[in-house]
Image 1 (spheres, rainbow, N blue to C red):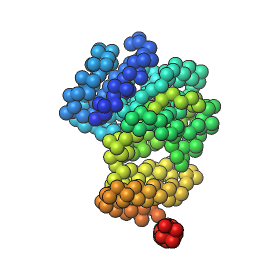
Image 2: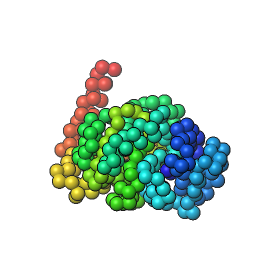
Image 3: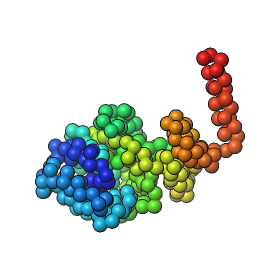
Image 4: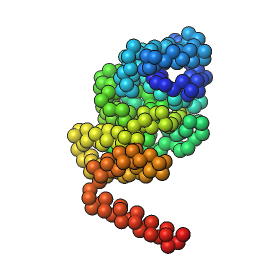
Length: 298
């Protein structure tokens, strides 16, 4: 199931990677679900690359990321469901290896692998971490409490699990996958291959890219951590708040370097909200020292 929203320049690579491993209509459903009611080009891209092989659906109104993911789940007919973002793609043997893992572990609800992180040019910038704890079936989601390296393109969930535990949250634009994977692991278990079989694309027009300037991404991730803390005993909420405060500061400095005063100010406000006064003083002192050292050695 391929949710798409204004990603037509990346969609051909996504479709090619799926069609190259097509198991045939008797075994595999392939569908693109376009969340932009005004986008006529997406359907043309699908027809050009796949003819009638790929189902094409266009929502009558924009549902937002979470709403479109759930629309994908509602349309899914097969036992194993991959929600493959339209700007991501798969590597060779993806379906073969994950299907084999699903057959080997029939009582596990979530099957995963690792992914390359790529940019707009599809060049690999990083590789997701190896979770050795997940390479044997487990219901323990603690390895992803503080950082998430389960990429959406690298996760397959049984359809009955989604039916049982519910769909993606629609009230946030950031962290929907984090919340879902954590919930799925606790409720249905995970097993993971250490192989890199997928690619996850980051670019300025992605959900995260669009929300960084206002620090909405940081605030929604903190909201998500507060939800985790209400459900999971021992969850390190204060440490996570400080970590996302540091993220906001890093984003502020990035926007400042770009000359974007509004983006820098919005992220600085988020940093102040999330960072204790004493920690802000220490950070400020360190920046002053670095500036003075730079002046004396320059």
